[in-house]
Length: 354
Image (cartoon, rainbow, N blue to C red; front, side):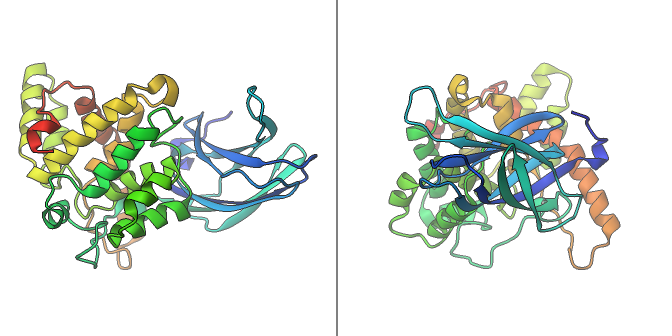
């Protein structure tokens, strides 16, 4: 595989809608796995539901994929089997992703004799993925300041986080690619709406939902906070503290910074760290190491708010914004990984009245 120059690689959000597949040799229950490369290495990042028994499958399922340094979408199609030998791979193919800023690209991808139709829509980091939006619904959950939500709920940690993380620990710790693989967009939006409206059946809905959709709701909540969990005010302090060369000074600084977070932010950080460590304890099965989890969560938890008017800002402003984001991602991952690895002694969640 030839790796393009960094400026030609894609980083941001890639929406992929898997529509249908034809030309199967026999009737069966089929599903597709989507893999996207990151600087030349492919990772499983989404999986459709299984079709009813058919020779022409239709899924029409959309996925919102976080990509970094990507150039190729690879599709693998499987037939579900009842045997203990696993499912049968019936086709494999790849498609080079659309050019930067190209929208709504519909293509037919050849998987040997099978043809899978997909649509792709790409949004670079310079626009939607870097912006945090304040919700216009004061009574909602997404896009509302975390302190406002916890005060309303009478908790230290938002109920959406404890509910979803508890469900993941109940039945998702061994799930391959938990927190990396995307859930179906419609499932994610259904859960989001239930939490937004404080639906009475939200616990039942979570218990019945696809585990990857639940994991995506957790990430989406943090991504849509109007201010990052680690706060705008302390962002530079976290990055600078992480960069200290003296081990003891670094540890003291990182502990002090966490203690200076507002109460709901601090409690949520500690709760999330403990949860993700339990996820990583099952890395043999789920393939999610602490580093993998830091890569997924770091930018969502630390990326500061950006005050750029998309309608009036010049393309040069967005290019500068995009370059800044790329530079800071490594620092954001590094800061969160430092805490995940337990290099700073922190209070446990029990000390936060959980």
